[in-house]
Image (cartoon, rainbow, N blue to C red):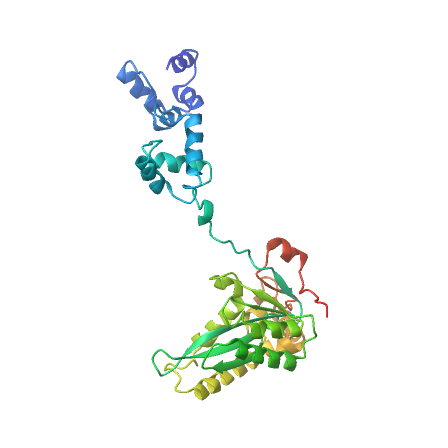
Length: 346
C-alpha cells in the first residue's frame, strides 16, 4: 500500500501502479477501507505461505522409508496407517502419506503390485501384396441359443483383399494352420517375405499354427492383450462384413448356410466393393496391380473434364494417385524410415 501511494504521489495512475504489483485496484481499496491490514488474505498469497503443520524434510523422508519397508512396499497408505497404529506408531495421516508418495512418484503401483507392461507391437510397412497379412476370428450367430459359428478371415493389408477364409463350428489352431497353408500356397508367397499379424487368442498362439509359420518362413506378429486397435484392419473388415445391407437379419440355420453367405460376401468385397482407403478401387484390382491403369484412366477423365469446363474447377483435381505404402501400428519415427518386413533366413 505504501508503494502504491508513493507511485501515485509521483504522478503514476492507480491502475498502472497496481498492475506492476499484480494487484487489482479493488483489492487495494478493500485493504484501505479495512484500516490496519495484518496479512494478505488473497488465495494466491495463502498458497505461498508455509503451513504451520507442514512436515519437515526429515519427516517426509521418514514417511518414504516407512512406505517402502518390505512389509509395506505393496500396500497403499489406507493399509499402512492402521498397521502402524496396531504397532503403536503414528507417523502422519493417510492424506500426508499420499501427498508424500505422490511427490515422489510412488502412487501408482509399488513393490510386487506392479502390473506387467506390454510393449507396443513393432510397426510394419507393406509396399506390395503378400508382404503383410492380418487375420482374426469373429462370431456368427446361429439359430441355436448359445451356439456360434466362427469366421476365419485372412486379409492382405496392402491390397485389402481377403486371401483366405473359412467358417467352422469351433475355434482351433488346427483350422487356422490349415487355412493359412492353403492361402500361402494359393498366393505363391516367397519364403521369408511375409509377416502375419493377429491378436493374442488361443488359436493365434496355438502350437500347430506357430510351427506352420516357422516352417514356411513367416514372421508372426501379435497385438497387445485387450488392445483391438493393434489389429485395426481385421476389426474394420468385420464391421464391413456385419454392417453391410446384405448381412442376414436372422441367425444362420446351419454351417453350410453361413459358408454360402460368406462366400458371396468375399466375392463382393474383393471384386465389387470400391474400398475408400485404396482410392476406391476393388481389393482384387489392387492385389493384381490393375488399379494402376484404373487410376491413370480416372486422372485422364478428370483432366479432360476440367479442360472442357474450366469454370467448374476452382482447385486441384481429385487425388487419384496410387498409395504405395500401407502401415500397421506405425510408430512415427519408424514410419518416416519406411520399415519393410524383415527377410528371414532359411
